[in-house]
Each structure stands twice: as C-alpha cells, then as structure tokens.
Image 1 (cartoon, helix red, strand yellow):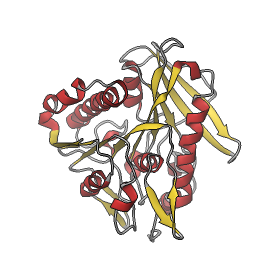
Image 2 (cartoon, one colour):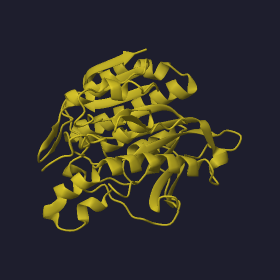
Image 3 (cartoon, helix red, strand yellow):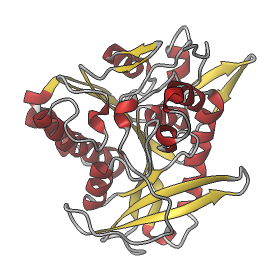
Image 4 (cartoon, helix red, strand yellow):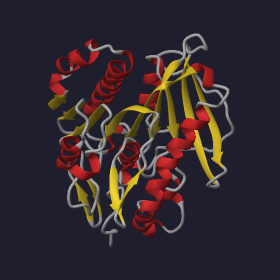
Length: 328
C-alpha cells in the first residue's frame, strides 16, 4: 500500500479491530438512561448545508442541565471506521458527572468503510478515508456540530464558554487540529484551530505521517491537554506501523505548558473503544474505568478549577500504569 507522503492525519488508522462499533442513522429520539445515572441520550441527524455533508451526532445530556445551571460540553471525534454510537462508556460517564457529551459521526471515515464494496479493497478504502481532504472535513464537522449545538433548542442548557474537544486515534488527530496543530502546505500554515475550545483530551494520538518534525506542528497547541495511551497501543495495517512511542512523541511536542500523559501497561489500540476484551478481558474493563475517571477528573480541573480528583488519580490506579507524567 502506498501512503501519501505528507498526510495531514498521519494515516491514523484504528485498524480492522474496530469493526462492530455499530451505527444507525435514525431521527432524533431519546434513549434509555445510562447505567451510571440519568441522562438524555439523543440521536440527531444534522447536515451542514454549506458542505452538503451529513453530520450525525449522539448527544449525552445530563439530567441536571438547566437554563439556570448550564453544563460544560465535550465534543467527541471517533477513530476511523467508528460512529456516533461508539465510546458510549465515556459519553454516559461524562453525563453522569455533569458534562454534556456530543459524539460526532464523520461520514467520510465512519463505519460504512467496513461494509461498502469488495472486502478485499478494505485497505484501499481506509487509505482513501485517511487523505487530507477528509482530515480537514472532520475538523469542519466538529466546528459545525459545535455551532449547531450552541444554537439548538439545547443551547440554554449548555455553557458555550466551557467546551472541550476529545477523540481517539483519527479522532485524536481531529482534536489536535481543532486545538491548534498546524502543518505547512505550499509555504503557508494550514490553521484549523477552533477558538471556542478550552482544552483537549487526546487518546491514542497517531503521529503526523511524513512530517520531519512534530514540534512545529504541535508547538502551537497551547490548550491544556490530557493524553492517554498504553504500552501496547500499536496501529498495524499493511504498509504502516505506529507504536506507543508515537503517542509519547505527540505528548512531548505539544506546546501547552499544562499537559498530562497516562500510559497504561499492556492493552491495545482498540481497548479505548467500546469493544470488550481487546487488550485482555480483565484489563479492558479496568482501563476503561480508569480512563473515564481520569477524563472526568481532567474536565473538573480545567473547567471547574477542581484539582483534587486529578491529583489523586495516579495513586488510585498505580497498578495499571506504566507511567503518569504532568507538566505545568
């Protein structure tokens, strides 16, 4: 397989292990409350008329949200081959903790890749979805969905001054671009920064494939950021390999003076999706529980000024960690 030499998103493949995340394009409807607390879960079939591109979303809205008490908002971007229904363990937990969570579906790189056309052409479809046009379109999906949410009937329930981007794998790359990462094309920096973001949660971030140095690309990211990975967080497809050292390199190159990296022992790249058992049956559940607790603690720190939960987290989960690093 030939990869584009300078790809905006670093061939951020989440690998065929993501098959089974599931999606259905339905009209808006309420779902059952999650197991961690009451929340409204809505599927909304939005579309951006300016780009003639559908942007389906799943919205986890805390029951406590009200016009008198608007809640912060997380905008979540899935990995390649994913959907708005994925990463539900994070969305439901965020809502239970008092944070709305808006899970995007990127139609150019979503679950349809797995079922469309000849299965022998899967790698080619993944490669097509990993081109720069789709990487850019994903950031515009995020911007459109955020604008839509903050102008919808739910807008009075949301605090537009406290918005965080989050994502896994390809979605981590989307998050980084929206948070200020820049690449140079034809002598000009391509700036896709979304100014309404206050912080970023970056899970299993790939490198920027074909770029000689990460520092000029990620140095402009000045938002507080949380990075999550594992020592076996490895992306493997024909012709491409990305190991956990790439996740560390992304963390090191981020220009934010306030950042944290949690590296779990063992695991897998798809362990951070909703799939059960990947990375080990016991470890999978333990890491998901620790990850959602860590992400919520980070949100409380950067949005609410509550430092205690994040400070206590490494000790609570020391048995799972290869390392936990903070700066700032």
